[in-house]
Amino acid sequence: MKVCKFGGSSLANAEQVSKIVDIVLSDSQRRIVVVSAPGKRGDDDTKVTDMLIECANRAFVGREYGDILAAIIERYAEIQRDLNLPAGIMAEIEKDLRFRLAGDKSHKGSFLDCMKAAGEDNSAKLVAQAFQSRGVNAVYVDPREAGMFLNDDFGNAQLLDESYLYLYRVLAHRDDIVIFPGFFGYTRDGKVATFPRGGSDITGSILAAAVKADVYENFTDVDSVYPVDPRLVPEVKCGIAAMTYREMRELSYSGFGIFHDEAVIPAVKAGIPINVRNTNRPDEPGTLIMQARRVDPGAVVGIACADGFCSLYVDKYMMNREIGFGRRLLEILEDEGVSYEHMPSGIDNVSVVLREKNFDHDCEARVIKRIRAEMSPDDVMVQRGHAMVVVVGEGMHCTVGLASKVTTALAEAGVNIEMMNQGSSEISMVFGVKSEQRTQAVQSLYHAFFTTQL
Ligand code: ASP
Image (cartoon, rainbow, N blue to C red; front, side):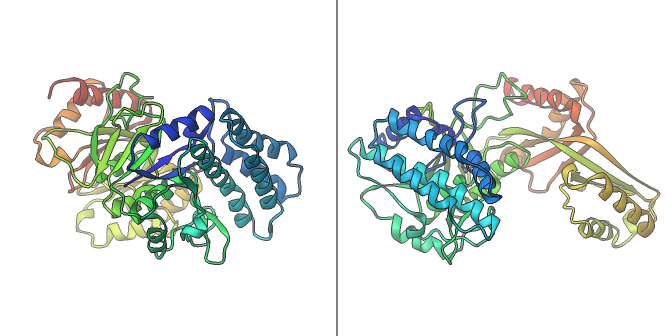
């Protein structure tokens, strides 16, 4: 059995919804369909979820919301009209939205979640009708009835473990096609709670794990996952055919933007292969992400790059002999609530790489003051404006000379390496470079690994 999730761009208009129906019907293994709320129809359009948030915020403070509500309803009405679906569904959708708007406003997070969830919920009802209008035995399934129970961390909810059993019982052995709204579930006391933004991916991955699917297909608007960000290397054409979960994690950690890491945890834990595919080009095989794959020596699967890092450099003669030095340094960061990303070190110095967004100038001043007072360093400084370039591939552990290939490529491109880090897992190498050199860095590595013979 396959669980398929369709993102907002696949729900944007009637033409896209028809593609969903065609795709699902073209493979009898596709039994569970998770849908997002309608997304953008073009660059200057607004996602239905964003419109719902705006509407909810206005309603919460008692401001007029009629125009935005009408615009939301129109997004669904356009699909209903263009697909010639029975008009009754529109009355149902409008009633649902008004009911939510009139709901309990004593807790803002709960009220907002109830409104946000309307995007996916009504999408699923409409899509179920689109299937039915083609004579297909498809049904909308309510997450509450299916047992999708979440905790009450509104906007950031987590699945309650017992849900897997309920979902299995309700969904695993059915004759019909299930249309399931993504992004939300219910608390034990019946309140709507949503996952973080983009959370329909989480729903899809939970359902795939719950029913022990053969594959979790994630349909989006790209053919596959690319080995480099096409915005940095526009000529990249060929996507990644297969990669492991670990490779995906390394790539997405560095801003590769495939999924939230959290989104795929349920599928990863259950060992379900994930297939990223394109709704607009369904014949493309996409990218398969799985537990293990055959690796060729030297093969690099992708090069990721993320901006917005800084390094906290601390130098002290004989640091390597000072027991507890690293712990005390990290304790100062811990007291400030700052997590660290990498920690390359020498004998007498250490750099702690941090995300700039977690380390503002006030925080920096407090940390430096404490390091000076408590650790008596010879030098301490912060350098901002770094990017991390990550070269990823399971084949690294059986390849000699890979680091030299990276450093040669960077040197030839005139990119200065500020920091290097390779974990003992040998699945990735991280290079810190100045932000302004990141495009050159990624382009040179792309050419070294993907366009030149190994
Ligand atoms: N509609 C929600 C969002 O825009 C969830 C999703 O599309 O996955 O974040």
